[in-house]
Length: 208
Length: 208
DNA sequence: GTGCATTTGTGAAAGATTTCACAATGACCA
DNA sequence: TGGTCATTGTGAAATCTTTCACAAATGCAC
Ligand SMILES: NC(=O)c1ccc[n+]([C@@H]2O[C@H](COP(=O)([O-])OP(=O)(O)OC[C@H]3O[C@@H](n4cnc5c(N)ncnc54)[C@H](O)[C@@H]3O)[C@@H](O)[C@H]2O)c1
Ligand SMILES: NC(=O)c1ccc[n+]([C@@H]2O[C@H](COP(=O)([O-])OP(=O)(O)OC[C@H]3O[C@@H](n4cnc5c(N)ncnc54)[C@H](O)[C@@H]3O)[C@@H](O)[C@H]2O)c1
Image 1 (cartoon, each protein chain N blue to C red):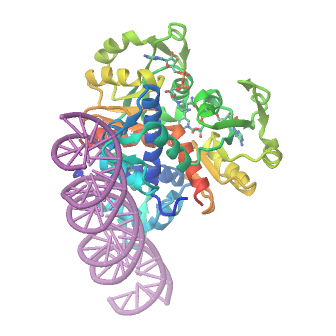
Image 2 (cartoon, chains in turn purple, red, blue, cyan; image 1 turned 45 degrees about the horizontal axis):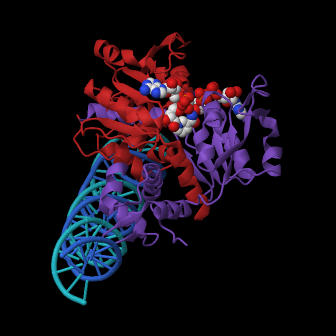
Image 3 (tube, rainbow over the protein chains, first blue to last red; image 1 turned 180 degrees about the vertical axis):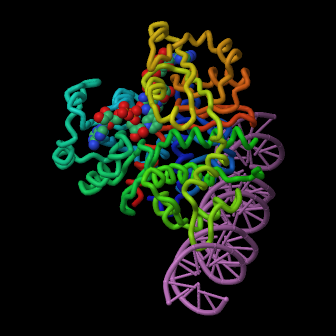
């Protein structure tokens, strides 16, 4: 359906548009213009239309976009037409927050396993999901592959865990550890780096 | 010291370089070349040199950069020469993870207050920091201004909390709620949007 | 000292992304 | 039906970011 060379920034905005559209749907809005979507999404109407134009033509001139249809189209583009299996490595504070967050399941992401190296953590359960020992990781992922792995361990062991996952065929990783992971070209990695976010804020505070 | 028009992407990389340099320092390395820094930071040596060149000349030709000196220079550029006061709004799972994370204090960010609207949460304490009722927010921020506010409430109340903070003079916000916040031009906002990160991963999985 | 090996700093080129601006289209109304 | 209005879709222009490539330093060996 889609050709290559879609900018990362475009994909991020599409996800944002989808979040906005869900809000509009909840409000009972039937249609929305690129202008309104842009205002809500923090961009410009030209940007909205350009982003969508990479994938097709979804609006009606003079009218705007059907909220329902555009949501559906965006879900298709983003690959949200099915559910995804997520494994979490590290059952610490962030790991437990991820497991207990209902928003992921709502949006199509099922957390199907969580692993930790600390035997005191193993056996704990949140929302019915038991923490398993990380030594079971390889077998568990072979039996029931995960689409996405979230790395929530301390930084020192993150690369090692990623190497294991990659060897097991994992193609998408969300990393919270403050290290830059090295992976093959065909594996997608996103980093969530909170200290970095704080530092971009301090830079902004000092350069206004 | 610095002129305007530094790209956001450059600032983010500077923060990344700083993290790498701290690793090199811990390893006892004295100097580092742009090539090595680039390899560790996931970019190119030309990019490293260009990023630094916006702020001055920090290396020695033929030798590279002094790890110690470049760290120090980057800390200066990012405004890390002093400590920052952070207030957290929302004492849920993510809020408590932030408060208990020792990495922030280590890097110059002191979490000085945490607020919640739920009276059952008020009075709980992590690492000696007591949760206060959000009705005390205005008085607390007037008495002891915060440099940065982290929003960790449900999405529905996030904009309202931000409006209160902005009215109190807060100029930097880190938002975890899945809503696009509206703020005046002179307020810096960073969004941490985990569902969006998952969706960029599903897009990548489906467009290989 | 001279020459060699390295690596920086930086203009200029290439490439990517955003903004502009407007013709084309569809809805609605009289 | 034809006129008016709003709004899309999209090339072209403007702007922004990254990469290239090389002269200018610097240390080191001999
Ligand atoms: N909590 C925060 O606010 C915060 C902020 C910024 C960055 N981070 C980063 O996120 C990551 C997780 O943070 P956290 O606060 O949840 O830490 P945490 O210490 O609460 O949890 C880490 C968990 O990983 C487990 N672990 C260690 N080695 C393991 C291994 N080899 N395999 C599986 N599990 C292993 C530990 O037993 C622990 O339960 C860390 O890298 C941290 O630097 C956290
Ligand atoms: N936990 C996750 O993994 C995760 C993932 C993605 C996004 N988020 C987002 O991060 C935010 C926080 O998530 P969480 O898991 O910590 O939620 P949580 O429900 O554990 O905590 C939210 C806290 O905010 C408090 N609160 C509600 N209204 C408030 C107000 N007006 N002022 C102050 N506090 C108020 C609640 O009492 C609660 O303690 C949410 O917006 C959520 O959508 C969380």
